Image (cartoon, rainbow, N blue to C red; front, side, top):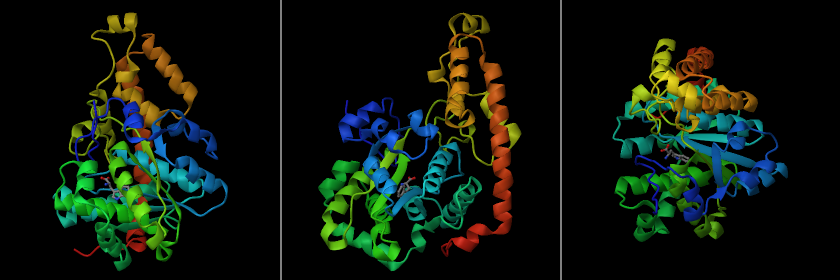
Length: 368
Ligand code: TRP
């Protein structure tokens, strides 16, 4: 079966492996030893694939100027799925990369039909979370698409000259004018850091969820075509798996009961976790006899993605689950407690950053 990645659709990839064959995404394995520091997202294959990440890491090791760019579509409150990207950025900044984050308010306006006010408010929320989680507000660049300068908009126009409709359809399927503009805008996001007026970063890495790969294929093609005229190189990228919502589907702000939002209060977090889909058996009796199935369990995923960074601890939990030694109720109570601890501390910092008005000081907020 062929899969088409739809960056605006409801994304479900059962087998991430297929992406390797069909689109030429490389498995992450060989790039891992090039990392100057370990991170469990890579070791656990949460980040599972890449394009030219090995070359980017080599440039980093050689002391070249390297940058990271990724974006958020401000279409809802920030949840654990977004926090994965923020954690990746924090790590890459620690490795010495320049980090730039785009709030895709033009895209949210075009494809999600949100009001201008909403997109801006959600955008400010993302930025506040990114800083609260540890991105350095003095080193990180943030921008809203609609508050960019002319040189950036000029890129969108220039790119439109060298892509055909057939090509857009081959990459995206049925595509509307709004989505065409959103895609070319995203290509401008991905490629503009290479221009001298934006820092002249020739090695740009784009960490994203696998659904965004079509935009990377487009941006890489565009880079080739503007290599001479603008000196553009192909961007590198890596891809993470999606953390699932507590119902077992992709976590999304459109299904708030099954998503963990970074501003959820403790009692809400507990309630959500206690209701979560697990890989448990029908009765405690059966569970003790046959063991649970962590691969199915959304609570296990919380441990794997955020709660247990120590591999030994995670392995012990896995083992106790499959051997039927720990039951889902107990497992959920511990997860809820750890998650509440993690987010309470985060919310404390979030509040500080809000009160200090940091975002308004460092980011140009678009006018309505
Ligand atoms: N399309 C992305 C999303 O839906 C947001 C985005 C805009 C982005 N520009 C980008 C992501 C550039 C990575 C790089 O979330």
